[in-house]
Length: 243
Image (cartoon, rainbow, N blue to C red; front, top):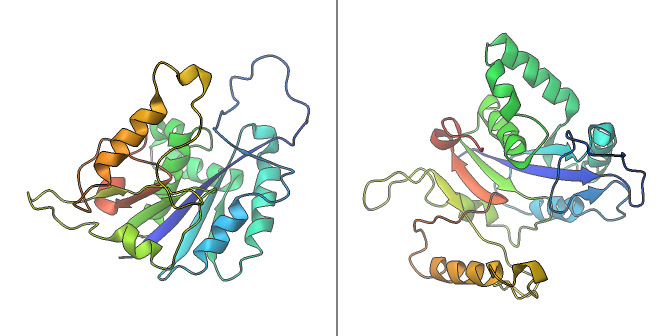
């Protein structure tokens, strides 16, 4: 297969920076965006870990910011980080590229798609990655978050294992998700539950669900998926988008 690795990277204002007054309806909210003045942003180690991955081809880094006013600063910071890894064939997708894409969608009379393909919001940002994969002619896309590290050189081989093949019941395998491990190699969440989670116990439910999925066979159906470690076949990403 000819995979493309897509890394959405999310950025926010400098620590202690001035924020807008009132409620900004255009602002995007992300779990853990990187401050512009972060000394050692996680994107660097993520790219470094990919350098040793066998079969690594093109990498698209999509730059999203919590505020449009810092979008170009975030893009500049990302380009500076990528410059430290000349061996990686990286393409940065920022505000300028987004504008070009929107104009092309309008020319093709797909203006109704624009709202779902932007640099604002998790789903819309990942949809940018899907379009990039299609336009650049790749037959598969592997999403990789900016705070992850590939643990060994066989990362892509495992990510693409079975993709496009048929399961025993004849169903084509068009989408896969993996899992994360911590610095100790454990997939279980062992952090203390937040006070707001005392009733729902999401951590316990997560561990229980993952415990089921970690049992054989290697590939099995799942209602649980991680967008930050996901492989999609072209027959999937050309037909189904993120919401």
